[in-house]
Image (cartoon, rainbow, N blue to C red; front, side, top):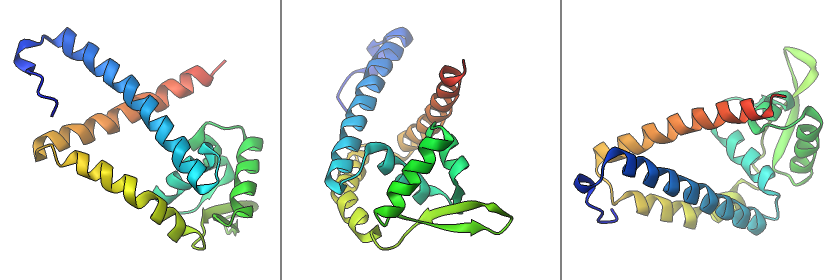
Length: 160
């Protein structure tokens, strides 16, 4: 914790402080994402795609990847082409629709990505040790909710 006495701050001050901290967090995470992508020789969007594919229980179509990343279908196709060429994903025909391909993470470079993520992932986990279980539950709920809001706002901003 940063030692700030919450009892002396009113709700407006707390909301303003969260807004500032959130903007700084997003900027820091963008810098981190760029640095990790550079380390792996990837574009930041490619790294985000790999990261999100890792979270999905099933392979995704290129169209689903486009929606997930806010890309056009053409951009998503080029992204998957780059990832396939780099040995990060594989494509297999969709058994339900032969016109589509399903994309999943390839295992060839998985160890390299896990190694690159190990140190920063450990640092992020260490930062969470400063919080109690109740606080961690609030952080997790906040992240889920702000992810929903971020996705909603991205869709809103992308709609002409």
